[in-house]
Image 1 (cartoon, rainbow, N blue to C red):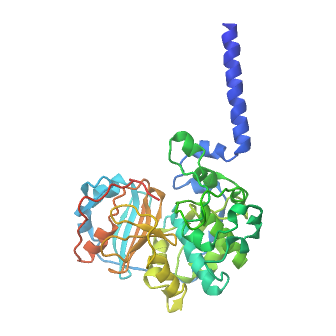
Image 2 (image 1 turned 90 degrees about the horizontal axis):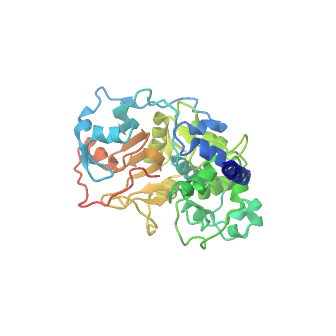
Image 3 (image 1 turned 180 degrees about the vertical axis):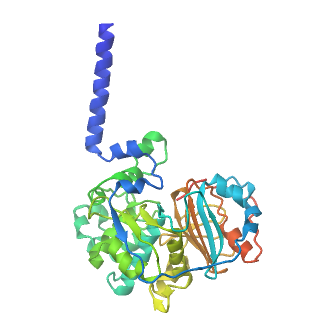
Length: 405
């Protein structure tokens, strides 16, 4: 019996030592273990860089009657099941769904405790903010060309040859060729993933410098956070401003926003997590949609160049490197651009069903905040239905994940 107790004590000690070594090697794993998959409030464990709103707010008109007829319209969920729209919202744990057409709010649904002024973390919608800032930096001449090498803006990376041939365009296209381990493959894989590491680390730059190359730049598309981080590092060096300050001064304060937004930082005065920690209210996020719907203009001011808006949300002659769902959405300049059917619409998308959807055909903006997400991409049908236009889902659409980036 005593021998068994000694053996158990030795095993426990060994496990404790292994965890001690693991947590010393990867200190962020303590937070990964504690918080696991981040939710709408996880960003609060990190310091925030506040983005102040406009001095004068723009206000959408609110329709006298909410378009409640939408509630019974049938949409496809991620299983390709045709369900009433209210069922779709319930299954996706929707916190907010808002439709704006021709600057008028025509439909709103809120979960208890939510309104269009509730500050919410938008996960990967943050990446689209990087795209917007890159366009502004090009307009200002702070960035000369997307074909410039990354190390010309971030010389700190010259110590690692993996960065030698990477251009800003490679990063914007998510074709850096850099190694990135996603969360798929089971609990252990998710625990040790780069996705978890970069969300919970307190020093993003320190981790970036150590990254390895696995493919030549520009050859292989892979969805990953580090390309957005590297673009942000380049932006900060090029503009001489922190990302939150640059976004505030050049974008957020110029489009009639009414409430502060924020970027979560890895540490005080550190790098903004522009891959997954951007916080905004729904009503102000819709104003970013309005900015792009109006080709970069607000009150006669060309906030973002029209050329950048056009280039960002149109694939042009580029061959999509990826696609998802029946709408065959491909990522382009950190937006998601559908390729199937009558297109022209586009979206910024975040984990758990966060969406900013824009449809120039019907002059419609849709904002969805969700706790889970139910897939299915109902936005086109809703946009066309509320505009009085016909819409038909494709026959035998492919299944897609219930929760997508």
